[in-house]
Image 1 (spheres, rainbow, N blue to C red):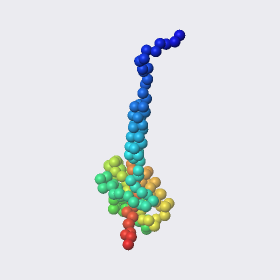
Image 2: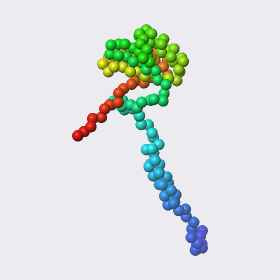
Image 3: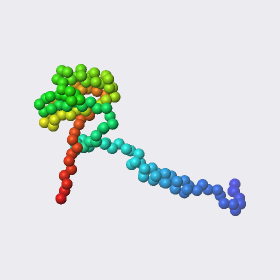
Image 4: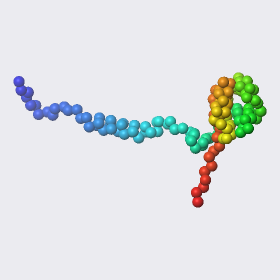
Length: 138
């Protein structure tokens, strides 16, 4: 059986507008995707560049080259360090411990200090560094 030709155009689906819209959506996503992934680190650790956190409650733990320890400028011994910090963290549970150690101290001594601060219940620990000075080029 043959169909009779009526002279009316056969209906066809035009996919060109759909493809155009799809390409616009893909290009838009490609353009904005770098801005969606915001996983940059604020601290450049190898260069020891850091920003100051003035708005947070900080407890400073200082270790001098001679081995003297101070908690918020109060001298303590190694044996008194954990109980002193535990009492402070019990009163101020949202505070952050900031370790300030002389650059000439052996890594093992700083590791022992970090372990003591962690065992005392510090919710957060930060290592203090000096901002690297940028030399002016002539």
